[in-house]
Length: 485
Image (cartoon, rainbow, N blue to C red; front, side, top):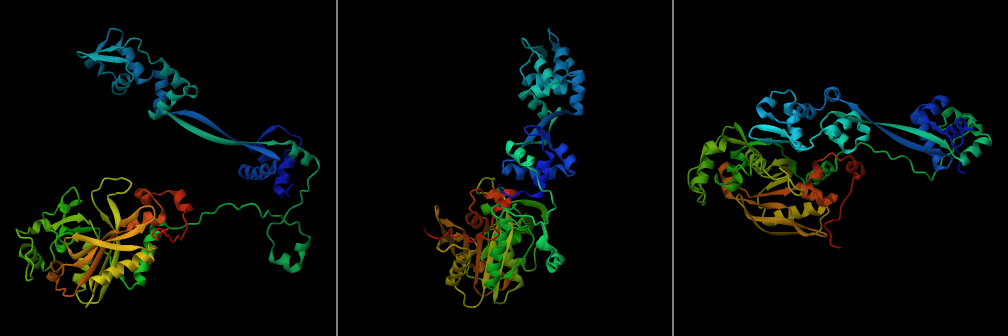
């Protein structure tokens, strides 16, 4: 038999002579001058040693709401209405004047207890609400009908928990032998150590084989930790972080990125438009000329008539690239290395792989002599630091970059997975703002990386407050999902 703590001994002493008898915890707590919660804890320890049985009993009770109390006296609305109908039937117009009509009529039709024909309401054969009235009078014995009354907010169900303790024969035998109730010391003081008093103290023994109680320290959400990891990687790679509002004008969100004004992505089914408008920035005429005929470049533009009113419309940003072009306008001279991790919004149907709002990682590099090969190197370095060793690229198309690529990573069990888009900004994007050096740019999906790193199958879990998942997720979990087996 393992060593007993003082409180376990006190519990056995309080139960002495009551072997086999069920004792309520509050009664024991009063006798031991302790709280019921403490007695339950001590009883769990003693139960592990086979000295007592601890039973948890859940008592359920039904409580009437004010509406339910009124119906107990007057009858349910459907009962009141059924009485008013009578056996011969009643005109619907007359029945509508009854105070119980609004609720009672719907309930009667739902239960198939009436028929309506030619404006006259008649009861069905054998129509009765007696069973529902019995359920309301005695919900404890009503079963499924009581649940229906709860849905109708006529009843509420309450639960109370109580514990009982029963002394086992082994516990009774130990209690009969006599127990040493000498006070124990669980923590030594400095004075006890210096004076040597600890040598004669009754020290509490600890079971080194017993697992301690799990402690859940406060920590940030796993998704936020992953975003912070991405941010740290880019800062270490020499990038500066850029910021901007989630509400952007269509000018910066679309037009400045050389998306034609009739592009499908600008339609209402893809974009959240707001009623507000934003003024056009200084020099907007150069962008108009770029769209209409290519401005002063070799481009021919998109042709047609560019509408400044459409560019003034405000939207919830559909990508963080709108921040990149504004950053370049404010920093037209090299070198520029900047990134943004921000939320973007698109009209998507919610399912395990799509949500109408998600995070995007945006990056730009502008300097003399940078090339497409540098772009691939930046992306490969980033993904490898994130734990994805196998990275490849395939050609892509975007209105504002040329050449363009779509980076892919290898995920065990899935194969190659596309992660976003990248390329070199076209002259139609940079020339209106006097940017003459090449600009490397990319927009990557953050949530996809998170799903692979965190082992999720449902994107929606990233945005839920699932305490169990948050508690059990490690603070740091460098994944190897990108590595081949």
